[in-house]
Every structure is written in structure tokens, then in C-alpha cells.
Length: 123
Image (cartoon, rainbow, N blue to C red; front, side):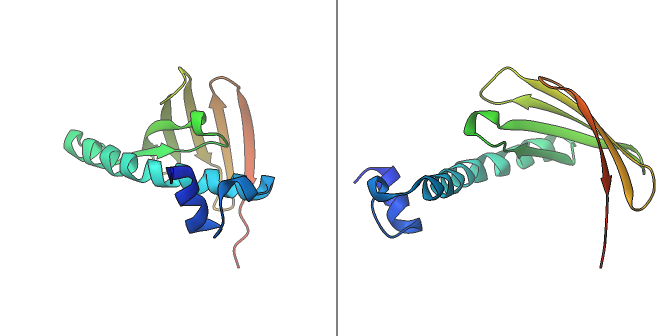
């Protein structure tokens, strides 16, 4: 049995050919999280050896959107990160600025650029 069908039986309990579109997306997420778990560990080990505390692999909507992200706080309210595409030559610079305890401004530049304003509600 191939690996795709093995994963399908583990997650869905039936072969891949009988999966619906939504179940296919679920299988994709399971497969990508399994493949990136080893990469995340490796990134942490390399970052630790270089003295970088915040290094991780960030997944996107699709498998090819994965990026190695390195970030740091410039001040208690300003966080800067830089992402390098693992499968496509795309780089991204992201800056987050905490305006208040509940308001966060995030600016991103890369393949697409934009800004977001986040409001945090805690219960």
C-alpha cells in the first residue's frame, strides 16, 4: 500500500479514492503537519546553535507556501520577522507593533504587501 493510502486509512478509515473534497483537505493538512514536524525540530536545533531564539517553519494554505521564519523583538512592543520560502523563492518581511494591550498593527511586505489592524478580546 502506498503512503497516501496508509495515511488515508489512519485518518479516515478508508482508501484515498473514496475521500470527498473536504476529506482530501484534511488529509493534506495531516500530511503537511507530519512532514514539517521534523523540519521544525531541525530549525529549532539550528537556531539554538546560532543563538537565535525565534526560528520556526510557517505553513501556508498550500504545501509550497511553507517558509523558514526568523524573528526577534526590537523592543517590548515591536516584533520583526523575515521569512524565506522553502519551495518557492519568496521572501517576506513582517513588522508587528503593539499599539495597546488590545490593539496590534501588522505590516507585511513580500509577494503581496498590506497592513492589518488586530483587536484582541479576552474573556
